[in-house]
Image (cartoon, rainbow, N blue to C red; front, side, top):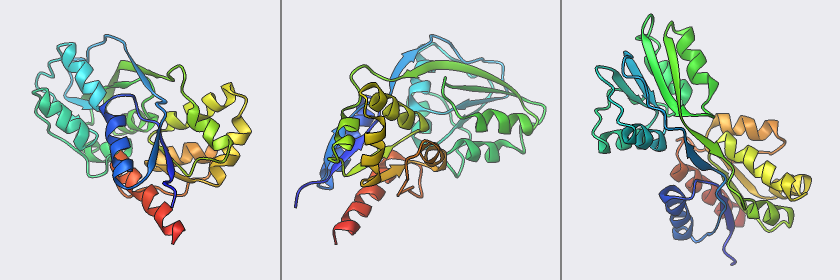
Length: 246
């Protein structure tokens, strides 16, 4: 049996390498097509907030490089990967929500932030759910953009494979990877063909926000893992492919 081709769109660093290795370990043929590249802004999170929220490993690393000191803030991580990065950088982690999403963070903090200043340090494509939810809970929110996420030059080989009906699965790890995939397809004149190619592939989305974006863009999603991690996404997509072959 031919190994299934599985497209992954993570930034070209250890995250992509880890996902590629996970696909290979399950007998798949990864198509590594980075759809995100990091452009640091050089900004530093505020140090005078009661709560400080970090939403990615990249953001933590940039905050640490900038010499960020959280002072007496309650430090919050969106999930265990971000929490691990904070601890590796020497920061104590006070809050990790049970659900590793912006909505999960809002739920975890809603009863504690009324009338308090909350510093949110993240990329320029952060979900509005986090800011809006904290404001609704009564917080005074300040957002620091630590980095911008752009589409790398040369990305889009997965769109070509999809257009040729040679892609068995695609793993979208954020709403932005969906948009950048479609941008890359359009840049090659393959927008409609790439969408049609995904119709015959197993499409996975890391969580409900990414699923909504894909659906809004005309891409049907087949798999959403119960845990919003890249590892769980790959596992769920490959399991669906295996079920289809039985």
